[in-house]
Amino acid sequence: MTLNNIMKPNSIALIGASRKVQSVGYGILKNLLTGCVFNTKYCKPYNGKVYAVNPNAKKVLGQKCYNSILDIKKKVDVAIIAIPAKFIPDTMKEIAKAGTKGVIIVSAGFGEEGEKGKKLQKEILRIAKKNKIRFVGPNCLGILRTSNNMNASFAPTMPPKGNIAFISQSGALADSVIDWAIESRYGFSTIISYGNKADLDAEDYLEWLANDKETKVITMYIEGVKDGKKFLRIAKKVCKKKPVIALKAGRGKAGTKAISSHTGSLAGSYKIYEAAFKQAGIIQADNVEELFDLGKALAEQPPLKKNSVAIVTNGGGCGVLTADYLEEFGVELAKLKKSTIKKLEDTGKMHPAYSARNPLDIVGDALPERYNVAVDTLISEPYIGGLIVLQTLQTMTDSVADAKVVVNAHNRYPNKPIICVYMGGKFSKVGMDYLEDHNIPDYNDPRKAARTMWALARIGRIL
Image (tube, rainbow, N blue to C red; front, top):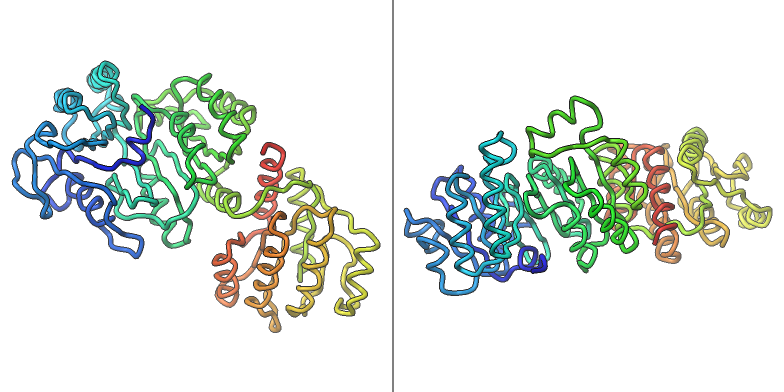
């Protein structure tokens, strides 16, 4: 069975649908029927058929309840299990009899809870293998797919639709990312919380997402993998198709120890994972914010094919900092040719005190017209592979008009990455929003922009 049954099902049965408003079984059913418990503009009902299973209720949320999955006479692609762990082996046998081949087990109480839980986990895996069932979890949040409005999880709402996939061992982290994505307008194609990974592991999701048309970039939060060789083999193939960015937990002794009680994983040496990521072509993020900053940029911008970057700034110090960070990450600063300088000066728009070098400091009083000349001249040069545009706020600064200059330049040269650093807040927000609306990454710190350009350069060498 491919993962299509699980990731793109036409029908879902929820085993453990509940009338208790604050229960997992209630939350999942409401998510399937409406898209979310916490209502947002991203909430829509799941496109497929939903069946509720609860032998102690006739209806939940207006849905007819079946005593068992065996009572559902039509085909069920995925069964979501949200009942106590001790009842799940018998439930898995019923699922097998019903002919359902995909399962999501959100229930906890397995490998993360000592020997008794590990024994129970081995039993459900045995039943699954015997009956050729593939399953997610146990001890997971579930799966969300924005293309078919499938919130097959107990996450409180759906994220905005986009082309970033997020694979996470931590359900709580996935929950928080969804909440944050709504505020920051980060769009997702898929969010997968896979918990204890008793059956399906990170590489299985990687392999499926590599061929998913809805996904451009794959991000991961990973604690450990069962089969390192298999993971490396698949990751190498996937990284040649799409960017993969990973945040590895368990870097120190305390974190490594905590992992075993969280998802029952064996974390392994951080240095081994670090080497494996590098060998596979996976970009490593240092924190959650960077994971999605890089993911968003790599989804929206083309790779940096020529390792030669120019900086345009209306603040000299910010340009120097950016140049330092680019050097730190091994991204080359383009040396502006005399012909380029002549093009700039022939326009008559450069300030007498402008820098005439890279970083190109167009001075604090720069109006949009000067930004336009600087940006357009540099991005059009064949020897310049990408551009970082910085803006500091002065009394004459027009942040929206400056943003339009950048968007227009990107539209003219879509094969070259452009990244912005709007170093402001309240009075720059409208310009920042314009950049976001037109898929131009904008950061509040030059180091983030330099790190992103480094990631685009990595991708440019691999793809």
